[in-house]
Image (cartoon, rainbow, N blue to C red; front, top):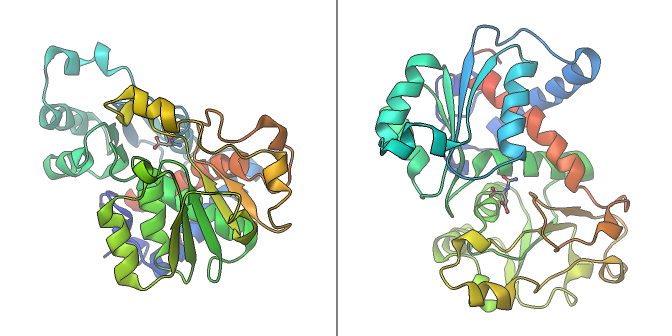
Amino acid sequence: MTNTIESFAGEDILSVNQFDRESLNAIFSIAHEMRVLVERFGSAELLQGKILANLFYEPSTRTSSSFTAAMQRLGGQVIPINNVQYSSVSKGESLPDTIRTLECYADVIVIRHPEVGAAATAAYYAHKPVINAGDGVGEHPTQALLDLFTVQEELQQVDELTVAMVGDLRFGRTVHSLTKLLLNYNVSFIFVSPEILRLPADVLAAVDASGHSYAQVEDLHSVIGEADVLYMTRVQRERFTDLAEYDRVKDFFVVDQALMSQARERMIVMHPLPRVGEISYALDDDPRSAYFRQMRNGMYIRMALLAALLGKA
Ligand code: NCD
């Protein structure tokens, strides 16, 4: 467990299990400073001379561009590899060899890959820090950090909140990471999904073992009034082997103005994005809709992490 900011220097970020409240507070306070820095000056030279390799084997808009922006705003540079079909991966190069290559040129490697454990494999072969930007249905730790930071910023607390996780809890890696990260706090959970998209057994077992109270339900209407945080997710089409099954569940939950009239006055709606119909566009101007502010926070969190891993925090 790395729990002081100095102890993150040279480390990998593979799972939310690496964090405790002390290290979370340290990262969040640096993220705050990064926000001030960007608002006042736009950029700094903290990571000048450093290079990040941004290796994406799966599509991405926010994660990839916010890592790029984070590195560049701190004065560093980026090698972007988001079209692996044009890299040597398409010639059959193995993940270890791709990683061994990139670490010759870069100081830190960000990887998104469709297989669970791919980031850990990359970290095993790399001597430089590796950041997991999503390993299949496994984890997405930096997203969970920015999600938690958003809850703290928006509601000024995490303890005592009721968090409703809604949608694809089975394949949604952001849900897996955020649920585990929230076990560091005194929260209660409402897991809202169709039967076939319930939380995986290992994540539920972690919640069970921690003694946090939770409910698993299928109906959002009956619980929306209890939520302080409504964490919406997209049904992960790319993870289904049977697309007819996807079609049956894809439109299960839609948050619209009618539903939000049942929600608390002081609560927030979050979404890791992209949304594909789960949140009505009519809600974008509702002050409770935090999903655009949430994505903005991603850059500050990633600036804080890069500074910490590269020993400059
Ligand atoms: C998420 C992901 O890739 O897991 N997106 C993101 O990083 N913000 C969520 C998703 O794709 O549904």
